[in-house]
Length: 366
Image (cartoon, rainbow, N blue to C red; front, side, top):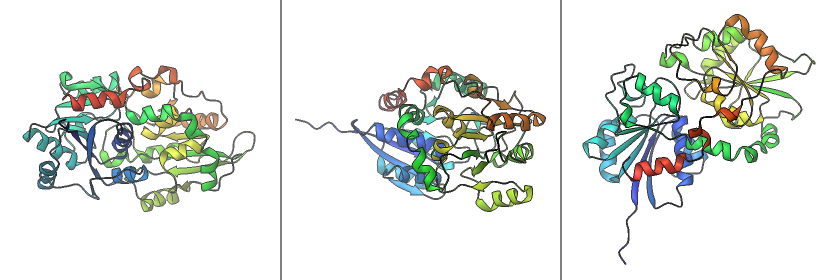
C-alpha cells in the first residue's frame, strides 16, 4: 500500500499572544496527519518551551530575509501560519517568501487593535506584507481590518484556539489557585490584586493615553478595602518591558506594588481576586476565567478603539475619565463591580472550533 505523505505546516510567531494560540494548536493537532515545523522568535520560544513543545528554529532576535528563505527551502511547507506582531520582520519575510514559492500563507490576528500595522512596513499602514488569507477572532476584528484597507475577501473569522482552551479548562485551571499562591507566599485569605502593564509608548498606537497616564490615574493604589482587609498588589510587566524601567517608574511614583516574575500572566490571573490594566490581552483572558476585571484607560480616544468592543460586550468596566478612577477602584476592591458576563462572548470565540477551522484553512489552502 502506498504511504500517504503528511502535509507540512510551518508555524511562525514572535509575540506571546500568537505563541499561546499556536502552542494550543500543536497540542490539539497531535492526532492529525500533519507534520509541524516552527520558527519561534524571542518571547514565543519561551511559551513553546513552557508548554513542553519542541521548536524547529528558535532565535532571540528577528531573522534576516535570506535566512527565512533558507528555512523555506529546507522545510518546503505546504502552508504557513504566521503571527502578526507589530515589529516582527521574520513574520513579514515569511509572508514574502511563501508568496515567491506559491506556498499558502495565513496570518493570524489575535487581538482587536492596529490591524493594518501588522501587515505593513513598521510604523506605517502600507499593507505591503499581506498574506493570502487572514484569520481574525470575531466580526469586530474583521470590520477593523476592512477599515484599515485590508480586502474583505481574504478575511476569515476563526476565533482563537488558546481562548478555546481557557474556556474548556477553566474549572481545572482554577483548582491550581491555592498551590500557585503558595509559590509566591500569598495566603489564600488575602486580597490579591494584579496589575497587568501595557507597553503602549513603544508602539505609538495613538490611543490617547499611555502607561504613564495609567499610573498617574491609579496612584496611590488602595491599600485596604472598606472592611479594613489589606490588599496586596502585584505588577505583571509586558514582555517587552524590562524590570529596570518599571522599577524606576514605581520608585519615582512611590507605588506600593511588587513586580511579579515567578508566574506567567495567566497563572497570576488564576490566583488573583481582582485584575486591572489598560487594554492588555491578559485582562480579557482573566475574564474568560471568570475573574473580576477593570480596564483603566484615561484619555482613551474612542474613535481609535471603536473595534475593540470586547470589554463592552462582556460588561467589563472601562474607566476613561481620570477623575473617576479612584472611586471606581475603591468600588472594585470592595467587590461592588459586576463580574464579566461570558454569555455575551461572540460565537466564534465561545464555539470551541478554532483549531479545526484553522486546520481546514491551512490544509485546503483556504
